[in-house]
Amino acid sequence: MKLTILASRNIFKIRFPGVRLYRSISLDPICSKILKTGDQIEAEKLEKRIHHSIIELIKKREDQVMNGEGNYLSLIINESLRLYPPVLTMSRKIEKEVRWRNLNLPANMNLLISSLALHHDPEIWGEDVHLFKPERFSEGVANATKDNIAAFLPFGMGPRTCVGFNFAINEAKIALTMILQCYTFTLSPAYVHLPVQILTNHPRYGVQVMLHPL
Ligand code: HEM
Image (cartoon, rainbow, N blue to C red; front, side, top):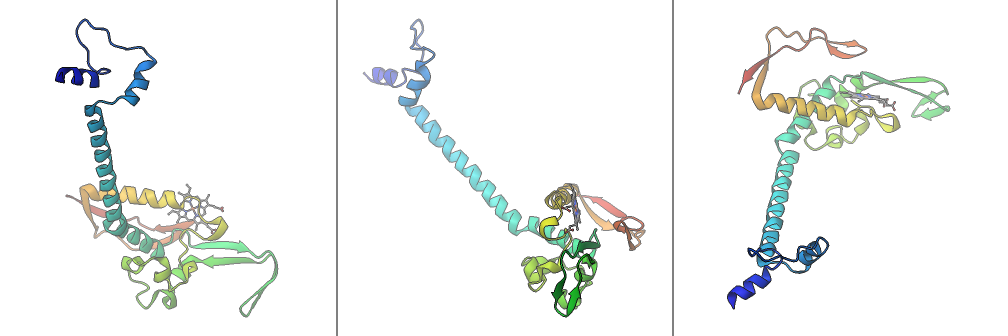
C-alpha cells in the first residue's frame, strides 16, 4: 500500500525497469506543474530560502559599503576633488542682459567660473579650508558647503554637467580598491608638491608613492 502511494506520488519522476512512463513531450512539463512530489516541493522551498538568504547577505554588504569603509572612499575622492579640481574653470555666455545682485551683466559676456576659488573659500568651507579633511563630506555636500552646493563644482553643474561623472568616480573607486586589496601606500620622500594647470590641473612632477605589500 505504502509503495503504491509513493509510486503514484512520484509517477512522473521514477522509472521502473521495463515500464514505459508517460514521457510524451507535451504532457511532461504540464503534469510536472500540476503534480509535484514532496521532494520537489521541499527542494523549491529550500531554493527560495537559499535565494532569500543570499539577497539578505548582499543587502547587508551593501549597507556596510554605503555607511562604512566604501563610503569613506567617496569622502576621500570628494576631498581630493575639492582641493585639486582637475578642471579649474568653467565658462558660460550670458544670453540676455541680466541684473545679478549689484552687477549688470550684458548679453554675450563670457563668465569664467573658478571652481578653484570656490573650493578654497574659507567663508564656505571654514578656516580649515586648506586642510585635507574628508570627514567634512560625511553629512553630504550640502552640509559641507553650508547649503551652497554650487560651491562644490568638480564636475560642473546644470544641463552641461560632466557626462563622465559617474564613470570617473567609479573608475577611481575600482582602481583604489584593487590597489588597497594588496598594498598600503605612503608618499615617497621624492614627491614634490607642485600642482600646475596644463589644460587641466596636474601634479607637475607626478605623484611618487611607495607600495607596501599587505
Ligand atoms: C575626474 C574626471 C573628470 C572631471 C573632474 C571632469 C570635469 C568636467 C567638468 C568640470 C565639465 C564642465 C561642466 C560644465 O561646464 O558645467 C565636464 C564636461 C564634460 N565631461 Fe568631464 N570630467 C571628468 C571625466 C570625464 C570623463 C571620464 C568623460 C567621458 C567619458 C567626460 C566627459 C565630459 C563631457 C562630454 C563634457 C561636456 C558636457 C557638455 O558640455 O554637455 N568627463 N567635465
